[in-house]
Image 1 (cartoon, rainbow, N blue to C red):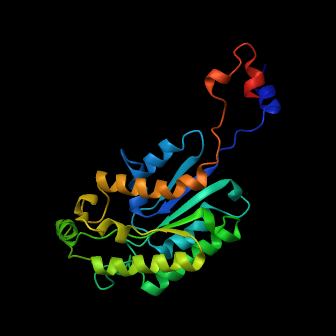
Image 2 (cartoon, rainbow, N blue to C red):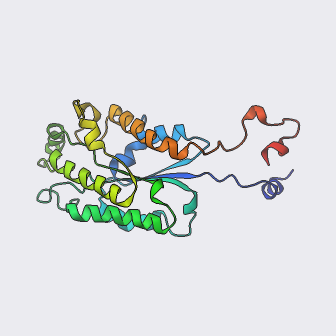
Length: 243
């Protein structure tokens, strides 16, 4: 059978999508042992996991970019879940890092705006997960800043304020939330979760992967594997099985 004829006979195999939207912590998530890599492995043949991380971005810029990433009428119904993972840059100290800093109230408004935009294109709040910034290990991040000739430009307490705002937005909008700032500091030293005081270490990636998967598993558990299991293919008449 010609391939063109087979394409006409068979149903399209359309992969649902999980979109990871965030800053560098999302962009780096597809590195070896990253939390995005973990999700992609768990969802192979069920979902395409798309990395839409933008290093250095804040919610002010992300809000403008989101409609270009997920435009109206462009198959948004096939998106099974979206994560919004911002705040590490928004919470930078204004006096030392004005380019990335976003005031707390605007940060919350931007998150709410993005959730509302997703709803306007058909991605309901039950398919959205907000992720707070992780805690900041100030001593390690200060060393990273000094190596670049800068001063310490973030504070853990400030990151906590943005994390709390993220949690409040999630509650107001009816989305799920993964409060990393709180969970990573609960009854333990969180420094092992961070590679440089800000970004995730291998252990931090494993922590995020486990916490996020616990929230995604139920949402995505009903998705079937795409394509029949190879032992179920009729080798004498594969067209019957595959088309």
